[in-house]
Image 1 (tube, rainbow, N blue to C red):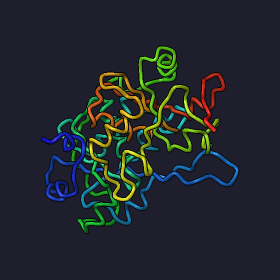
Image 2: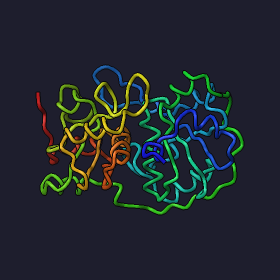
Image 3: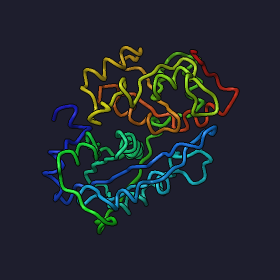
Image 4: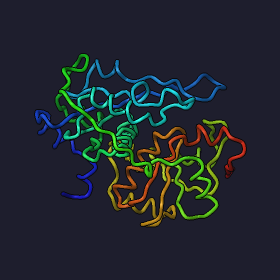
Length: 294
């Protein structure tokens, strides 16, 4: 199997496999609505209404906000307890023998968030639909309306891989030791501190920038597909990431960082972790070092 196909499903492949009972397709979209002028933060709206208006035929809806986030955390989208994640996946029809295809309407970052969570809980048989809803609908492939249909009986077993999730202490150690490459998945203006979406502008001290989105991102904004692996490797190499070195990705709340982490793993970087709390935690703590380049 070509390397890219281990991580990405093409629209052609999925269209030919929609009737396969082992394949479970999940939409993962969340809308982050911009705050009122002068305010920071986003309003979180899972895209269930969009799903009910039209979705890939036979797919279910995975809710990253309500079902797959830690309800005890003050921060949004934090990794849930294993029991909660396993219950939700089982309810979605994802079992230990399933083949999962994830898609969204937002540049793949919600799909890769769920992909990363599945991987962190020990499940490796998941792929992201390359191009997502944008490519699927552009090609006129099968869609349907309404609420999610019947869900196949399934049992998901969670086996946590803690090395895939980083906390602020590991990030601090990486800054001090220089033994890991810390990668910011936000856009260049946010990285430099020209725009501010979190408590403080700028980036974590010592971190480099490989955006998930935009003209220089790992995803082509026109097609919503991931760039060629050679181009993705070149982006990480230009930022200073070295094969075999520990990598920690972050963004505002662990979502865009999932897409950059996904791209890194797909490009051959084997030791990658996601800083789950990202700038939602880091920027709010004045004791943690940040840099502004403007």
